[in-house]
Length: 171
Image: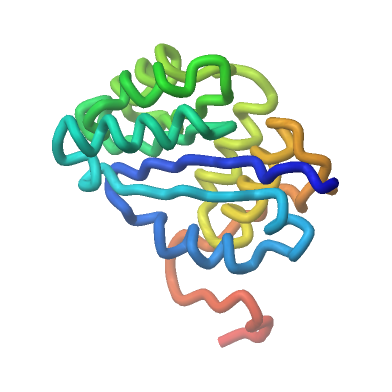
């Protein structure tokens, strides 16, 4: 009997990563897709207590919670309640190095800040792109018990200019 999929809830304060995340989910190999379920929301979905409670219910049934704040806890309404709902499970808070509020939030709510596992997840997130988000999803699934092959390491993507992943020529 196949194992039930690992459920990963991702809350993005700005919703900027959600289209790329959709691509990453679509790019999962069939064996990966069978073991990974993603529930993604933007902070704008947390617009009142009723919605926060509903999303906290989703988090209670998940294996991992990933919070992508933008400027600190106020960027994700109900972040403390969501983290409480994820008690005993993996909680990753992606903190920008230049944001003391995000660093504090990660230390307060995250489950393994400072560990190699946290550093690997942070690396996938900070480098961006669908391939890195796919690697993040597989890594989180593995870190929560899924038996999947390790994904490729995070890849560095250009941060400026025009980039196409299949173009190898010069200008």
